[in-house]
Image (cartoon, rainbow, N blue to C red; front, side, top):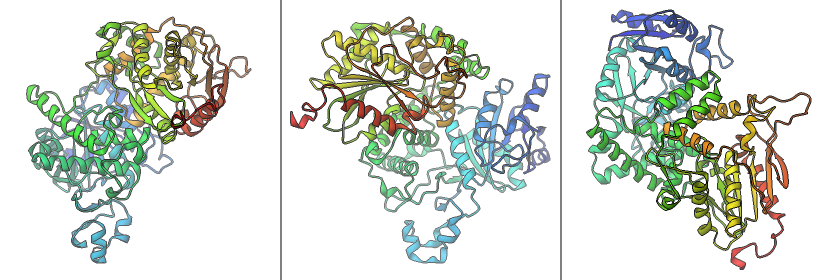
Length: 638
């Protein structure tokens, strides 16, 4: 791999010089701003962009030549967010971004990550220390106190970024030697031939990923970010090893992967803490942990897994079986279409255009694009509701009434995972149901009208609640949906005990004076921030689903409702909120006809994330005060 290389940012490891020594055409830029200016002025775009990634998480270091950041990262050192910026740069659309970390990953199966390794796990410590690690002899332990934990975290985030850009991003971990940088062109050629996107170079030796997990009969010692071990080039990728393994061995490998990664995201020191037949909710996997687990599994296997995967497959054992099925499916797809990467990137022209419009702060146009594109989606009518209804997710679990039905926000990254923490907090107390909306999968059809959609959701709710009292909850635009479903149920003679709207604004908010200047842009920017922060999966399908539902409810206004309505308002503005200094216009959520209004800590997003406990407490207190409360409120007493 020769071609033309650009080295962007400070170059403390002399990568540019090392590449020139082996005959590579190199151009260097102090920062991304300089690279942008040069390419805009006609500089020939490179084939490869090399950027050194430091361990500090702060973003923006590539955008200017100012000094070190507060975390002490050298001038020009990049973060994973900076790498995402490079990938989105239009002038570099044809280039492969090579993100280089230094000593971020272990390169042997028994390596222990962390500076505490040398202190606590001396090879001379004896058989007890070895037994703690599932090793026959402590001398089998590869102590590597030089591993950089901050860089390991950056590597983990970069692996998740591969889900979005599997064909344009390559991760390389080096040992800092000049020989390692001189080996880069050869290493990339090897990786390309092997179909790899992550590798390590130690001196002049190229190492490619392989499964390096603890034996099933011994505990696993996990570092904070648990980077996979790496083995010599040619030993094969995850997909290849699993495909070549016998069926029973493949199942064991996958269970070890899921259990180990589950332990890691939950902060356990060893995988023995995880029962692979226990439900993720019982293990303590909330919405954030579910996303982190999804990211780790996706990065390890190359599969693009949905954020709801732990709801669809609620135990480590069932998730491992699903991942195995998906790997077989992906291998079959590649055999028929070799150009498709594992899992396939579902980003297409709509996602690219939406991202570009967002980067230019043109959110009105971005919303218009996804609404217009949604018209091209296949649809179904009321007669076809049954075969187009996704299975709802059941959370919580308890005998206290009323039951709770929750509706997600209907953004491009929405789904039952939004209520994972909500359900965990009510576990053992109340049953919680989260209906799913069709459209997020590529082969889904969208409802042909708001009436069809509301009918689908009502048909999901009615058999689940039966004759039990129930409350509907909706967050953001999910509040509009919850209200519409409540009205439909009232028409059917099934009145909800109440309706709680979690920081919901009426749909016309984006057009109202005092809100239209900031509301839509702030909401979409918040969504994009979460996509980057949590490495959420989004696609043309999820964007047009979001646009489609907004289009279906265009002009909808809340009809009169007999059920009491609670509006929960966030007390903190999200970035981009314009606050009227005179106080004449209130930036906070509002809803016409709300019978009760309660302010809760957090902003529009964090009231169901960091501050979910106070939100649940507010809803529970309100439910306890409803008129029916106190009359046979436990099913076991009925």
